[in-house]
Length: 304
Length: 287
Image 1 (spheres, rainbow over the protein chains, first blue to last red):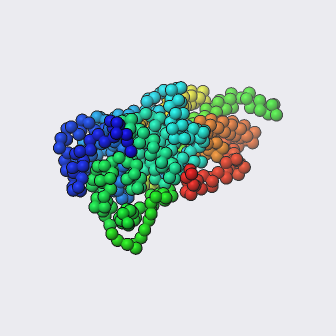
Image 2 (cartoon, chains in turn yellow, cyan; image 1 turned 135 degrees about the vertical axis):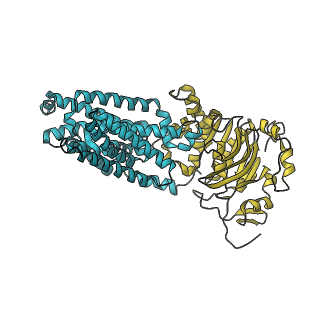
Image 3 (cartoon, helix red, strand yellow; image 1 turned 180 degrees about the horizontal axis):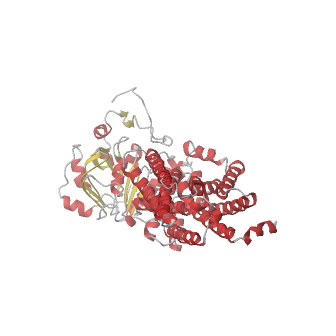
């Protein structure tokens, strides 16, 4: 995946590998070391909505250059975890540091992309308008976009192969094109940390490859990329690391080790099926704009 | 024709009404564009009704009409904002309660001043032709304040309206902006009361912006078109009401509504709603 000369390939694999075989969470040998070197650092964090807890006792340290997939069943708290990192939710307990500061303070260095379902696609804005929004934090209040911002927007649109759509209203785009545009908005911000909620859900294989190539390139440049996904095949093949979540972090480490039947069974409970070495999620269809070609949905015709 | 257009301009009261109509039309269209996109037209209607006790109280206390209306309208809109964010009741329920309750309080206050022959009809439906020089001054100051605020916070308002989560994550104080916007809606309603009155003010806020959205898909153009339609309807409605000797506020709203219906029926994008929905639900991804 990465060149052997790449300093950001697998910078700190050793501690995570050690704790993987047992699914239990173990504290990292030197927590202060982890904290100082992490882009994203959560310690014993819990959060919920109203009085209902959504995540409990979350410990997570994500290092610069890490390309991390957050996987787990519906309602496991994947999006909630991302919102905590983006400063959109205040934790009930625990401590969070994002790029060395409190969440929501290093806003110019963080780009957050919400799920496609949370955007009003009928809104009268063009593709270029949306990508320009990525420049707003750097512009600050009262300032209007200048030539440098327009260049950044054009560059980001070219990266996602959407340059010719700059003047198109967003509602006229396909699902895959919409995800491209929102990734372009994040790229235009030039962040150090990407927080992407379902960036490749419901898109065609070509778009998925293109978007993952871009994210991989960003990670190689030392940027931290954290994305939630439903697509275990994509997590296994394209992400360096995976964290499985179900109310708690079940496991976090290199994707080849985490995407193991025992860990997945612990994450997904009974809704997981392993067929001929391929892992299949049973109850996870309703989040998709359209089912991705890679995922299969089976019913109770077999048990592992 | 020129004669017919120029004739009413000889009257100062008509000139003042014309300037007021254009000003109110502009402010309403600018704020209304955001109101329509946020889907909070019903909040505008509720706030307009809530201004009524403020207007009556201002009469009783002999303070300027704008002051009473502004206090009541801004107070209610911020209360609606707070209740819908914090309390665990549905927004439409909270607004239904506040809307009827405040309006009833206005009627109650009004009925205590039976001796005073204030005209209930002009409270409820506006009376543009009675615009005074003082009214124009108040309109200009308050309207200018609203327009300047929208101008300064243009990109933040746009981002927060389009994608509140993305905007909040990028450091925009979305909750604060929401309250500020509700206050702007309240001030817009206050300056529109003289023109169209409590009952019809929601049309000034919503109809031109809704019409503009049927015609174009670019945010800047939607707003520019909304202003054009709004001022055009206000001015032509005022002329019509003068020639026909009928209520001006109602005539303006009728003109706006007819323009909306004409665009809905004949406009180039009328069929688009169906196409757009198709793209959201089943449209193929890029291949």
